[in-house]
Image (tube, rainbow, N blue to C red; front, side, top):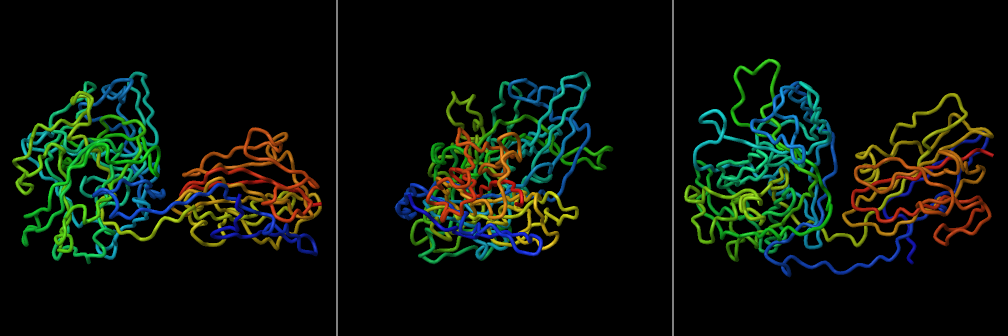
Length: 570
């Protein structure tokens, strides 16, 4: 066992009691224990394969910029109307009430790969480390429903899908990020809970009418003149990040080494790097997982727009819960020495059936019969099935080695008084720091650290809340919290129910539901140790007034939680 002081920040709370100060000496009483921490060295990228799978994605939620609702909007045609895999009511007359921006935008801040943290290289590609433009190179006839119109697709994280099977009923679909009417603009945003479905699928239609076909043969992520040039010391520290929903599809990638000075289009490439389906790595939720709805635009926006307005992208089919996966391509994995220290101008993505040695500039010669669905490929990963995630395609730079454990912050606040008539504003957030910012982003951190007015009297109640937040990039493992009951007060054993004097939000991101713990040392993570009883050593010097002890377990990166209890003034 190893005992630790709070790595980031610890703040106390006290109230004024009548003519004297009363505080709980909780600074010495609140303790954190990290058990069984084992740390090994982080390998350097040079010791890895040519590219590295991402093991953690750090993308905290933000409130969408806008919210837009379309009433009685149509579904895409065709759409998947099957009960098991689709929007079961999508071919009925009722339509759908479709809301964009009804949830959260997940904004990419950093990733962890090869044991290190990488952040957008805003010094090389301001302001966000993203390429300056994206171009879809297409071959063959357009697939839009209107002759001559191209087809475009986007998937959005879905918050709610409510299909009403009553006659002429209207369904409800709520999508997390704000509406965006251009695939290019979506991919150049930093929100990673949008993307493109089966981006290189030329020919495959599912048996359930999930039509994701398109005529895209190459996607260019382009940087204009003079490009980006790296020193030899940086070619393994700077590179491109590719993210996919599901992390189970092959593709190809090549660096752009020259562009036309007038058009900015690629004129030369480095070698084609072929990425197998099993290269994504990671297991479980590495930071972002989502259910999604695929939307399709089969024609340009109507002019003049219809009344009432209709969204440009219409719902086609849902996709069940999948985790986002990523791969980091350092420049020296795309360009050999000495080419890796010469200017480069972005990169292009290719279907997995583009062969090694192909003329990458001449995309019109690429296969135009690329299979995009595993069900059409004998169950194997399809060469055109890449489900590109938006917002993760920029230039990133190694910034630091991942700390051996999470950067756990504890913040104690008074969050309610019971008895005084005039109460202060407990909804405010006091203080600063990375931990408190993370708490605020998850709707937590409220309360006051000092209360002068009103003063508390005998039999008044005081509610204390201890917030915890891991703003680091590694897990804080085996965390146990102990808070001794402030002297001059008595623990209320039935604050939240009979025998339930402890309330909590278990470590989660976003913050999970509030639950109650019993006071007994039973099956739940919390217990109250009565005054006079022995305390665990990590609680510090025993104040003799009892303590709340909660086993928080593993607090993952960007996870938050709280412990809450109430006391009565003696």
